[in-house]
Length: 247
Image 1 (tube, helix red, strand yellow):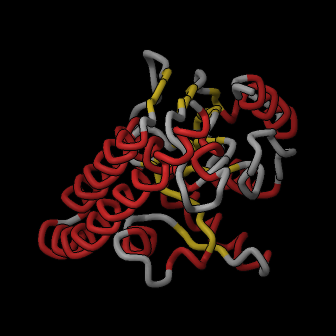
Image 2 (tube, rainbow, N blue to C red; image 1 turned 180 degrees about the horizontal axis):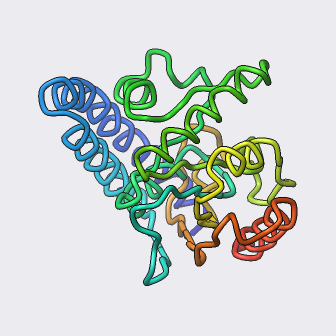
Protein backbone atom coordinates (compact mmCIF):
# COMPACT_ATOMS: atom_id res chain seq x y z
CA UNK A 1 0.00 0.00 0.00
CA UNK A 2 2.83 2.41 0.85
CA UNK A 3 4.52 1.64 -2.46
CA UNK A 4 1.29 2.31 -4.35
CA UNK A 5 0.79 5.61 -2.48
CA UNK A 6 4.33 6.65 -3.35
CA UNK A 7 3.82 5.84 -7.04
CA UNK A 8 0.49 7.70 -7.01
CA UNK A 9 2.14 10.75 -5.47
CA UNK A 10 4.03 11.45 -8.73
CA UNK A 11 1.09 12.13 -11.08
CA UNK A 12 -0.88 13.81 -8.28
CA UNK A 13 2.07 16.08 -7.52
CA UNK A 14 2.29 17.05 -11.19
CA UNK A 15 -1.41 17.90 -11.19
CA UNK A 16 -1.03 19.86 -7.95
CA UNK A 17 1.89 21.92 -9.26
CA UNK A 18 0.07 22.72 -12.51
CA UNK A 19 -2.86 24.14 -10.53
CA UNK A 20 -0.60 25.81 -7.95
CA UNK A 21 1.43 27.44 -10.72
CA UNK A 22 -1.73 28.75 -12.37
CA UNK A 23 -2.90 30.19 -9.04
CA UNK A 24 0.43 31.99 -8.64
CA UNK A 25 0.14 33.48 -12.13
CA UNK A 26 -3.52 34.45 -11.77
CA UNK A 27 -3.34 36.03 -8.33
CA UNK A 28 -0.25 38.10 -8.99
CA UNK A 29 -2.12 40.60 -11.22
CA UNK A 30 -5.30 40.15 -9.16
CA UNK A 31 -3.69 41.36 -5.95
CA UNK A 32 -1.86 44.19 -7.74
CA UNK A 33 -5.19 45.44 -9.08
CA UNK A 34 -6.85 45.00 -5.68
CA UNK A 35 -4.17 46.97 -3.84
CA UNK A 36 -3.74 49.78 -6.38
CA UNK A 37 -7.42 50.36 -7.12
CA UNK A 38 -9.25 49.31 -3.97
CA UNK A 39 -6.72 49.39 -1.12
CA UNK A 40 -5.61 47.22 1.75
CA UNK A 41 -8.84 45.33 2.48
CA UNK A 42 -9.37 44.19 -1.11
CA UNK A 43 -5.72 43.14 -1.33
CA UNK A 44 -5.96 41.18 1.91
CA UNK A 45 -9.11 39.43 0.75
CA UNK A 46 -7.38 38.37 -2.47
CA UNK A 47 -4.44 36.98 -0.49
CA UNK A 48 -6.79 35.13 1.87
CA UNK A 49 -8.68 33.60 -1.04
CA UNK A 50 -5.45 32.55 -2.77
CA UNK A 51 -4.33 30.70 0.35
CA UNK A 52 -7.71 29.03 0.75
CA UNK A 53 -7.39 27.73 -2.81
CA UNK A 54 -3.89 26.43 -2.07
CA UNK A 55 -5.30 24.50 0.91
CA UNK A 56 -8.06 23.07 -1.25
CA UNK A 57 -5.61 22.15 -4.01
CA UNK A 58 -3.53 20.13 -1.54
CA UNK A 59 -6.63 17.97 -1.06
CA UNK A 60 -5.70 16.48 -4.45
CA UNK A 61 -2.91 14.68 -2.60
CA UNK A 62 -5.22 13.54 0.18
CA UNK A 63 -3.97 16.20 2.60
CA UNK A 64 -6.37 16.77 5.50
CA UNK A 65 -6.44 19.61 8.02
CA UNK A 66 -7.11 19.33 11.73
CA UNK A 67 -7.28 22.81 13.22
CA UNK A 68 -7.90 23.73 16.85
CA UNK A 69 -8.47 27.38 17.70
CA UNK A 70 -9.61 28.75 21.07
CA UNK A 71 -13.07 30.28 21.26
CA UNK A 72 -11.45 33.59 22.17
CA UNK A 73 -8.77 35.33 20.12
CA UNK A 74 -7.52 38.83 20.97
CA UNK A 75 -9.30 41.49 18.96
CA UNK A 76 -8.24 45.07 18.12
CA UNK A 77 -4.84 44.64 19.75
CA UNK A 78 -1.39 43.82 18.33
CA UNK A 79 -0.70 40.07 18.35
CA UNK A 80 2.59 38.17 18.06
CA UNK A 81 2.00 34.66 16.68
CA UNK A 82 4.83 32.39 17.82
CA UNK A 83 4.98 29.11 15.93
CA UNK A 84 7.29 26.24 15.10
CA UNK A 85 8.12 25.82 11.43
CA UNK A 86 8.19 22.60 9.39
CA UNK A 87 7.67 23.51 5.73
CA UNK A 88 6.49 26.18 3.30
CA UNK A 89 3.02 24.66 3.61
CA UNK A 90 2.72 26.07 7.16
CA UNK A 91 1.96 29.47 5.64
CA UNK A 92 -1.44 28.99 3.93
CA UNK A 93 -3.20 27.52 7.01
CA UNK A 94 -1.92 30.35 9.22
CA UNK A 95 -3.07 32.99 6.74
CA UNK A 96 -6.49 31.41 6.18
CA UNK A 97 -7.49 30.09 9.59
CA UNK A 98 -6.14 33.14 11.47
CA UNK A 99 -7.22 35.65 8.82
CA UNK A 100 -9.19 37.72 11.36
CA UNK A 101 -5.85 38.65 12.93
CA UNK A 102 -4.37 39.93 9.63
CA UNK A 103 -1.14 37.88 9.98
CA UNK A 104 2.06 39.34 8.50
CA UNK A 105 5.39 37.56 8.24
CA UNK A 106 9.06 37.98 8.98
CA UNK A 107 10.45 36.31 5.86
CA UNK A 108 13.88 35.73 4.39
CA UNK A 109 14.81 38.30 1.80
CA UNK A 110 15.08 35.73 -1.00
CA UNK A 111 11.29 35.25 -0.98
CA UNK A 112 10.82 38.86 -2.04
CA UNK A 113 12.30 38.21 -5.47
CA UNK A 114 10.49 37.05 -8.59
CA UNK A 115 7.96 34.62 -7.09
CA UNK A 116 4.56 35.51 -8.55
CA UNK A 117 1.91 36.44 -5.95
CA UNK A 118 4.12 35.55 -2.97
CA UNK A 119 6.86 38.15 -3.49
CA UNK A 120 4.37 40.95 -4.15
CA UNK A 121 2.39 40.15 -1.01
CA UNK A 122 5.51 40.02 1.15
CA UNK A 123 6.78 43.34 -0.22
CA UNK A 124 3.52 45.31 -0.16
CA UNK A 125 1.13 43.50 2.19
CA UNK A 126 2.71 44.55 5.49
CA UNK A 127 5.34 41.82 5.98
CA UNK A 128 9.08 42.43 6.21
CA UNK A 129 12.04 40.76 4.52
CA UNK A 130 15.19 40.07 6.50
CA UNK A 131 18.72 39.22 5.46
CA UNK A 132 19.74 36.41 7.78
CA UNK A 133 23.39 37.19 7.07
CA UNK A 134 22.94 40.76 8.33
CA UNK A 135 21.73 40.79 11.98
CA UNK A 136 21.55 44.60 12.09
CA UNK A 137 19.27 44.75 9.05
CA UNK A 138 17.14 41.94 10.47
CA UNK A 139 16.70 43.75 13.79
CA UNK A 140 15.68 46.99 12.06
CA UNK A 141 13.05 45.14 10.03
CA UNK A 142 11.68 43.34 13.09
CA UNK A 143 11.42 46.67 14.88
CA UNK A 144 9.61 48.04 11.82
CA UNK A 145 6.99 45.30 11.81
CA UNK A 146 6.57 45.67 15.56
CA UNK A 147 5.61 49.29 15.04
CA UNK A 148 3.35 48.28 12.14
CA UNK A 149 1.27 45.83 14.18
CA UNK A 150 1.16 48.32 17.03
CA UNK A 151 -0.18 51.07 14.78
CA UNK A 152 -2.74 48.91 12.97
CA UNK A 153 -3.63 46.30 15.63
CA UNK A 154 -2.61 43.43 13.38
CA UNK A 155 -0.45 40.37 13.93
CA UNK A 156 3.02 39.20 13.01
CA UNK A 157 4.11 35.57 12.70
CA UNK A 158 7.55 34.68 13.99
CA UNK A 159 8.89 31.18 13.46
CA UNK A 160 10.79 30.93 16.69
CA UNK A 161 13.22 28.17 15.67
CA UNK A 162 14.75 30.50 13.07
CA UNK A 163 14.53 27.88 10.32
CA UNK A 164 12.31 24.94 9.52
CA UNK A 165 12.63 21.52 11.05
CA UNK A 166 12.98 18.97 8.25
CA UNK A 167 12.03 16.04 10.48
CA UNK A 168 9.31 17.57 12.65
CA UNK A 169 11.54 17.49 15.74
CA UNK A 170 11.45 21.02 17.20
CA UNK A 171 14.64 23.03 17.37
CA UNK A 172 15.57 25.32 20.29
CA UNK A 173 13.89 28.71 20.12
CA UNK A 174 15.97 31.68 19.06
CA UNK A 175 15.20 34.57 21.35
CA UNK A 176 16.45 37.79 19.83
CA UNK A 177 13.57 38.30 17.40
CA UNK A 178 10.95 37.69 20.07
CA UNK A 179 12.70 39.95 22.57
CA UNK A 180 12.85 42.71 19.95
CA UNK A 181 9.11 42.39 19.33
CA UNK A 182 8.33 42.34 23.06
CA UNK A 183 10.33 45.55 23.51
CA UNK A 184 8.63 47.24 20.55
CA UNK A 185 5.09 46.15 21.44
CA UNK A 186 4.87 45.58 25.22
CA UNK A 187 1.06 45.82 25.12
CA UNK A 188 0.82 42.92 22.62
CA UNK A 189 -0.66 39.50 23.18
CA UNK A 190 1.26 36.38 22.18
CA UNK A 191 -0.51 33.52 20.44
CA UNK A 192 1.43 30.22 20.58
CA UNK A 193 0.85 27.87 17.64
CA UNK A 194 1.95 24.24 17.27
CA UNK A 195 2.20 22.80 13.75
CA UNK A 196 2.47 19.06 13.18
CA UNK A 197 3.17 16.83 10.17
CA UNK A 198 3.72 19.69 7.73
CA UNK A 199 7.30 18.46 7.28
CA UNK A 200 5.95 15.28 5.69
CA UNK A 201 4.76 17.30 2.69
CA UNK A 202 8.42 18.08 1.95
CA UNK A 203 10.06 14.86 3.11
CA UNK A 204 11.19 14.28 -0.52
CA UNK A 205 11.99 17.93 -1.11
CA UNK A 206 9.65 19.73 -3.47
CA UNK A 207 8.78 16.60 -5.50
CA UNK A 208 6.92 14.38 -5.12
CA UNK A 209 4.55 15.57 -2.42
CA UNK A 210 3.48 12.53 -0.36
CA UNK A 211 -0.18 11.54 -0.26
CA UNK A 212 -2.39 11.32 2.80
CA UNK A 213 -0.66 13.84 5.08
CA UNK A 214 -2.62 14.78 8.20
CA UNK A 215 -1.73 18.43 8.79
CA UNK A 216 -2.47 19.62 12.31
CA UNK A 217 -2.41 23.14 13.76
CA UNK A 218 -3.12 23.77 17.44
CA UNK A 219 -3.60 27.39 18.47
CA UNK A 220 -3.13 27.81 22.21
CA UNK A 221 -4.68 30.47 24.48
CA UNK A 222 -3.20 33.94 24.12
CA UNK A 223 -0.80 35.37 26.71
CA UNK A 224 -0.34 39.05 27.49
CA UNK A 225 3.29 40.14 27.13
CA UNK A 226 3.21 42.75 29.91
CA UNK A 227 2.13 40.21 32.52
CA UNK A 228 5.34 38.17 32.32
CA UNK A 229 9.08 38.50 32.56
CA UNK A 230 10.27 38.32 28.95
CA UNK A 231 12.78 35.50 29.47
CA UNK A 232 10.25 33.45 31.40
CA UNK A 233 7.65 34.16 28.74
CA UNK A 234 9.86 32.72 26.00
CA UNK A 235 10.50 29.64 28.14
CA UNK A 236 6.74 29.26 28.58
CA UNK A 237 6.10 29.71 24.85
CA UNK A 238 8.71 27.12 23.95
CA UNK A 239 7.19 24.57 26.33
CA UNK A 240 3.67 25.29 25.06
CA UNK A 241 4.48 25.13 21.35
CA UNK A 242 6.72 22.07 21.69
CA UNK A 243 4.23 20.13 23.82
CA UNK A 244 1.58 20.57 21.14
CA UNK A 245 3.65 19.08 18.29
CA UNK A 246 2.50 15.64 17.25
CA UNK A 247 5.41 13.20 16.89
